[in-house]
Amino acid sequence: MLFDLAFVERAIPLILGAIPITLLLTIMPMIVGTILGFLIALTRNNRIPVLDPLASLFVSFIRGTPIFVLLFLFYYALPRVLGVGIKTIPALATGLLTLSFVCTGYLSEIIRGALKSVDMYQMEAARSIGMTSVTAYRRIILPQAIVVAMPNYFNFTANMLKNSSLVFGIGVIDIMAVAKVAAEGGYRYIESYTIVAVLYVLFSLLFSAAFRYVEYVSRRRMGAL
Picture: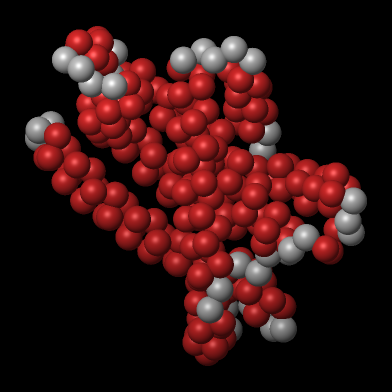
């Protein structure tokens, strides 16, 4: 049989059980990357001595290196730096750390561009009426920058959902790993990877719908619609 539906029925519950790992590998790096990326964006936009060139070097390295290469680099280099065995550090921890750095590098550029798109004369106007820089950023600059950044931010999140499958290469048991193990018994790789493909498509559609709604509400509150 070209496509074994009985195998699909058996494999789906196994693969669904690994969804929390896949979501963890998407959501946690995005949270870490947003926080660190914002700090790097501020550092580069304000051209802070010493930190600015270091941040620029970090971003260039992360954006210029394939994610798969970064995963293996961290997988083998991190234990050596810490002086421990490779198996001492869980593959999931290595995957989360690597993807967090990836998100930081890419999101810093998205956030930096969004902040630069806001007319900084508004900052001067805010200071002239007695606002502090922090208050002006929080109440005037950031709300506008967030709206500008949303499309690119949401697209990157959808890409990170798919890129999370790369951690399978260092032994993380995500939906890709479970699908491979499930397929090996009867060589039902087509069925297994079809299930995975459908799951990624469904998650991408759900993410896109949620992101469109959030963007619509945000723009409406900002008076952009």
